[in-house]
Image (cartoon, rainbow, N blue to C red):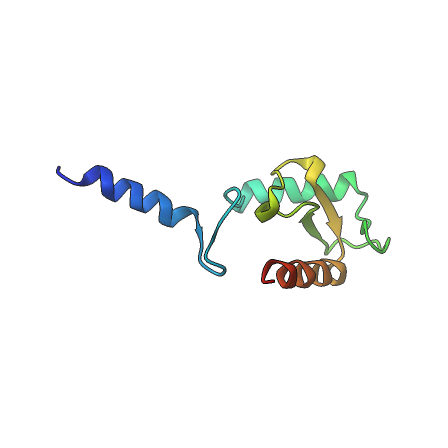
Amino acid sequence: MPGASKIKTVKSNITRLDMRQGSNVATDRIRGRQLGTIRDRIALRDEYTCRQCGHITAHGEVDHIVPLHLGGRESDENRQWLCKRCHDVKSEREEKERNL
């Protein structure tokens, strides 16, 4: 089919585009069952303790220490357990820095 390779190239470029910011994503986000497994592993490793404030919570968030858009890796060494409050504060700060 003529032009099929061009369509495939455009589709892959669109897939890599971060629609919120219009910038390239460092890596695809992990979702679903795989994310749940990672979440459980990091929570257990960090003993459900927020790495920022020390609060113990089962309702925390897995956070990338170095954000993916700054070249952070999808590895356990780049993940930490944060309470919701600390995660929200960190995410807000990173979003402001990203938009400068």
